[in-house]
Length: 477
Image (cartoon, rainbow, N blue to C red; front, side, top):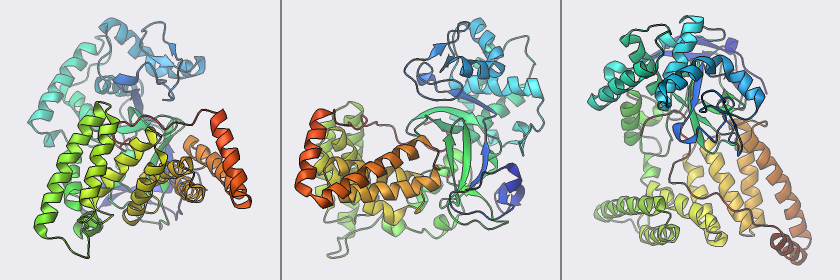
């Protein structure tokens, strides 16, 4: 594995996209093209007391800053490392009396750094914060209104003794945060915990079927190659999840990032036939398909409501009913079927109904394998969860196979040092040992497994969240 530096890339004019980054040498799957620390980053408002403000790790017991009582840290080391960025923030928080929202805190941190270092290029950056795109001119009425509120609140928070910035510059910084804010996840990569600005990453353009992925690991982002990349080839990441028809992806990208996607998958509508797949024999009528799509949309709304209220048995009932009705109409790669399978397998696992969950999880993974890029991080995480569910259900061979498959994907997307990959490696070793025992003496294996599970609390799946998996870039809902 190569560890990247900024010499591996160069800025160029990408046709129809403006600036982009291209590779200055050849890369292979799992290579780190470059790693970058945040120019500035903050913890989400809702998690300020449970996530360290320096390393973004979730911890049970954090030390609070004795001055502002707002910032929280793992230990003295994290607190000391934060002081340069927190010093001005600390006195501003005390003066203001209460902490403003995450966007305002991030804007202030960016501007204190500009005040400290000037607005030119900082070490290791290919682009300055001043030169990042802000798209303020594309803001709709609602966004303009939000921007004015943010600027007003910022001016109340910004200390009078700090450098004075023009209204235009403050608006520029909020625009930069809006379209370049990158989601930071906790140490296991399972929960979005903060937002940061990474100027070099801001130069990487979007493709729905990209050649790179981005992962946040140990306080920095890594741009990782998903396969062979030739010298001179443009580097791309996907700003959104791939699992939507091309028209919906294009609408989402236009609405959130203000550009028209011209990638091959969007232009040719690749995989749309699978996303909208219907049964071949007998083929349902167009009317039946239309009715089933409407029924599925209505059911997904009911599921979302029941899930947000913690009514998990109701969620399962709705999913079972929908899957039964979809069966004669939709193919197994149909997006509506896959959404039901994803929810029902996760919720049943949480309810410890592993046998039924494992059946749905297998169908979900079969569908995903036909749709996602073979080295997609979300595919890897889904296969890992399905493998765990099957292992819990006692389907040792299937569970082990899926855990091995997930491990191979995560070695590329997350790398061997990421905590989730290490967890998966431990699971892989454990299931391999169990599989060997199972093949030698099935009866003894089941006896020992039963005894082991009776003696130790079952590893319960996390409570299902109504929140989707952390998106790559942080956008206001």
